[in-house]
Image 1 (cartoon, rainbow, N blue to C red):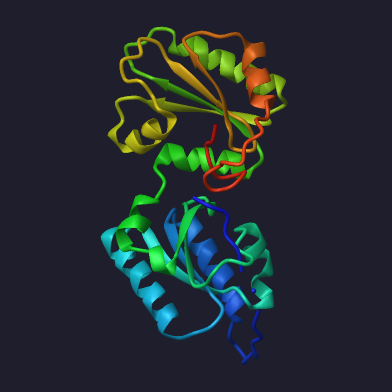
Image 2: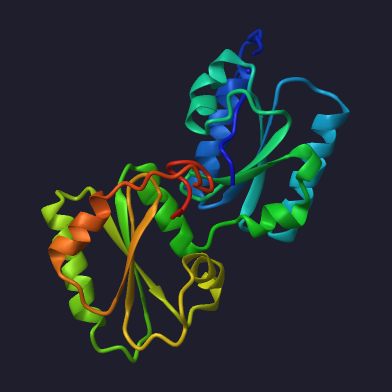
Length: 247
């Protein structure tokens, strides 16, 4: 996932109608309230390319109709400036299809020539990935504890993470991931989780989205805090500083 970019348009108002910019914000808000993932098609000009992008987004929507919706956004409309900034799409080749998770956070996106319905569906975040994205979007570091029900040390490890969060004045959050949850397979693969682990594994992601440290089993609170505050100099970060888990 890369960083994304965009530009301009003007609208006239008719009595009793919404501007396209107001309509876009309203549709995004409605989708978020209903807990749906949004395939957001950003564009500046209408035509064949926009029609193709919308068709791909609608095809993806048909693969998960109850969990997704399609919204279009004219990125050149001054009224959409805040959304363009929020999703970091200023300057991108358009049309562009973004995948916004149920919290309204950008989970990824593709330019038209690379877009397929399958790719878009594959970008839909799992429940735990969504929690991770939300935490990073809120500027927080994240402790991801991967466990199995048979692991006795889970409770103590979770308590240490909770203490670290408190000492960091709630600038961090903890996410629990059951290693046997098939819905979280993609996240576990991204974290490079070893399924032969005999103790819970704690992954520490700083507020810039970098995976700074991995702990097998127990570790002390000060180490957790230090890892959360660590910044790694790196040019690789899928999805940008707030959207990827990178090391």
